[in-house]
Image (cartoon, rainbow, N blue to C red; front, top):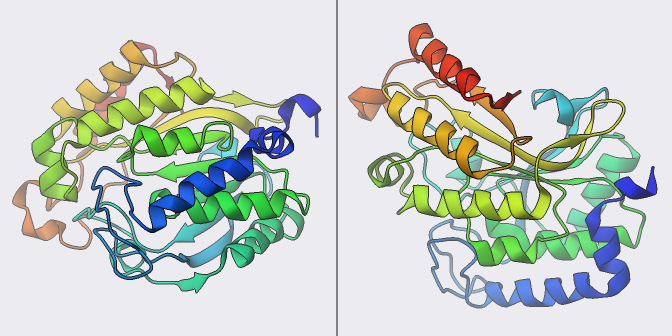
Length: 302
């Protein structure tokens, strides 16, 4: 690997700062304020909004070929799907994992071994952490352990956008690629559909911080991403105003080389049928209008 493309966490490890990040992050396990819910609970004794304990829950791991092309390449993106979530999306496709916490409790040592299996056995292009927010302390310690055993893949932080800047600061120099969702641009929709208070405010602050850390998405000579920001937005039924405002924010406030994946995969899964306005699929006309708006803004689209 080209030395200039080495993951940032290797430098943090060599400086001793990665160990300091682990120590600081683990304080949250006794009084958790990792996400905007700020439950303040001791996770060894009881659970908060996300229902996670003090051990990481892994539902599955391995190469995934359904992600964006710069992450997938030939060998796939090395996804680790975590159980639980700090949001309660009523249309969630993975509700067994996110809401039900499906998966097995694993120690940080085992999580480190999973990362190494993804690298050395599956030979994936990255470590893709799916729904990682509530397990940041575990992830940091696992990376600290794994780097001593040769981990050298870029870390992808694949989240729902409901983040705290203080938690993201713990990841500065550790995460190479941020891949957040930006779901809503109104407080009402964030609270109604995901039980995420002040979602737009937290998502915008988070994206600004992610952009500060890693900037626009960068790829190597093979087209594989090694650093930067990739933003996902799922266009929802009746949500074009939200979509346009979100795209305008990206245009106005983030690096021009951020990659934007405008998605049309919405389906009324899980409890979406309880809400008439989203109890249907997206129409072709709705998505076409969103796509045209994004193109007219000159955004870099996936």
